[in-house]
Length: 471
Image 1: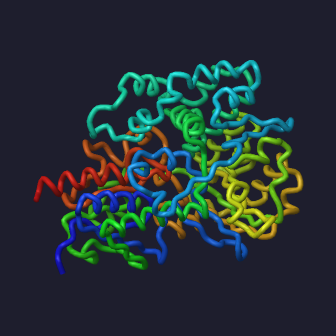
Image 2: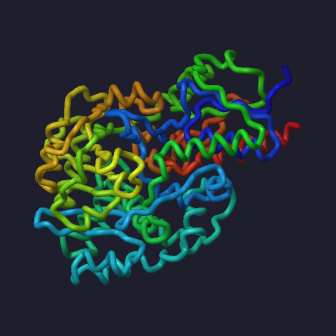
Image 3: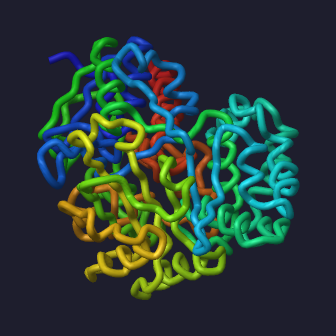
């Protein structure tokens, strides 16, 4: 058997991206996936009832549609089609109104009220219309040359490195502050934390530049398109192939792991190489089969692909802080998605799938179903009456479903302290390891979580540079 150039372990979006990029450069590549199906955090399954197709993890993809790595591949030809909701994001409030993000900055600003509309426009003005260069810069890794637009990246950095609570002081009202806090909360860290403003700004800009779309048929379509392109380039995929030791894999010049740093160290025999890497709080996820659309009080929420539930910025920060500090959830901040509003093929006619998660401590074994549904009922009275079935996944279930989610951490690493900027550890090339033939490409590496494939892209670049240097 001829030696392969690279073996990739894990068929999530980053592993598939790394494999596809190596294959298209003429390297012989084989991917090994422990599950019987591919996808990692981009899967679609019938979790509740026949005909209801749910996304167990990611559902909405503002970074996917704007990903430089995905845009460089002909994924549309391989079946990936983006569908856009009428409203990208709605953030309802107890009075029945909602802040909203749409492709229009001005239209979005007006939903924040006259006192804050101008402040919102001014906040985003330096960056709007520059997604291609900004995305390439903030989804990059510092070791890989100079940024495309150093001035604008520095300006973005001065804002982004601040806690979201600081930048939110630019706003006078609770709507703008709540919207900004909800965007920042995607970091799965208290919004008072270092660099949380960067998360909020990236998600707001993504909405205005490319939208927050869903893939037709579900998130599985992203993984399937990447796999199809990989095969077209001559790569091979092996499912049902769990790897416990490096010597179980075929001979290769490089091994690329789309796994947690802990799993990589265990499989590759790297000992305590990543013992200081920290994992964060967990999600508590519920997928619903509904008899009708969610009866939101706020009109914008009834047209939105994504709905954030957190009545105030203070409440959102408190919910995230409780999860990080190990306390049971009481009033959770919720991130919800309604894919079947945009893609009716996801459920039987007239029915809907609904996706929601709150935050709980890592490894938490309690049941947050009631507190989540009580929060939903506040903003969508009668929601429980529509529930046909639910599939509940707390931290143990999330970790069992995806080995990268240590303790239920869907971000594969805590967004806190120096680890916010330096992951998985301080190194000139963060994808390389102490073993010269072993590399890491998961979301534990820069630029971090999200279905965008950029960690796989950068890791592939590190691999092919080494392979070419040694050939």
